[in-house]
Amino acid sequence: MALRAVLTGDIVNSTRLKKITEKKLLKILTAALAAHQFEFYRGDSFQVYVKNPAEALKTALICRTAAISLSKSETINESDIRISIGIAAVTTPVKKLGMSKGEAFILSGRAFDEMAEAGTRLIMTSGNSLANVGLEIISDYLNAIFKAMTGKQAEVIFELLKGKTQQEVAELLKKSKSTVHQHVTAGRWAEIEKLLQQYENIINQLT
Image (cartoon, rainbow, N blue to C red):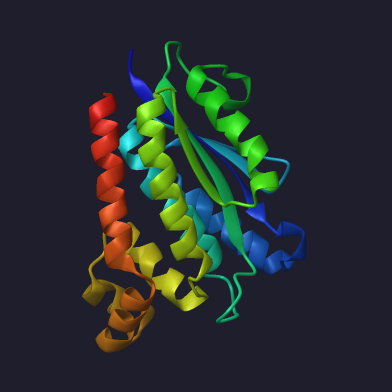
C-alpha cells in the first residue's frame, strides 16, 4: 500500500482581503499546486492530493509563504493559510478529491476541523502514533516561526522553498543580495530547512 498525503486548507481572514489581493493569492496558489491533484471549493478552501508524502510539508509551506507575502504590515500577518496534512496509505484510485474517503483524507479533514478551536495554522497527523509525536513537534516549531514572519521575509522564503538560490531570488525580486540575506536570516530559513529534513526523515521511516 502506497503512502500518500492529503492537504486540507483555507485562507485565513479571506473575507477581509481586498478582492484584487484574494484573486492574486488564488492565482499564486494555483501555480504552486500545479504539480499535484487539487481542488478549490467554497472560494477560500482547498484540498491537495500529494502522491509523494515527502513533498507535502514543503507544499504546505509554499502555500503559507504565498499568503503571508501579501501582508503589508511588518508586525501582523493579515493573510495566512490554515492547513492540515494527513499522511496514510491510499488503497483506491483518487479521481475526485471531494468524493475520496481514504485514511489520508479522513485524517486531514478531521484534524482540519479541530484547528479553528486550537488556533493553530499547521497540523500534521499520520496513522502512526510514534511518528505523530515528531510531526507535532515540527508543526509547533514551524507555527512559531511563521507567526513572526513578515511579508517581505515570506516573499523571499517562498522562492527558496521552490528551489531558487539567494542570488536568483535577489535578481527576481530586484533586491540586493545583502537585503535578501537579511530576510533569509530574520525569516529563520536555516531552521525551516532543518525541519523539512526532519519531516522527510520521519516519512522515510514510515514508507
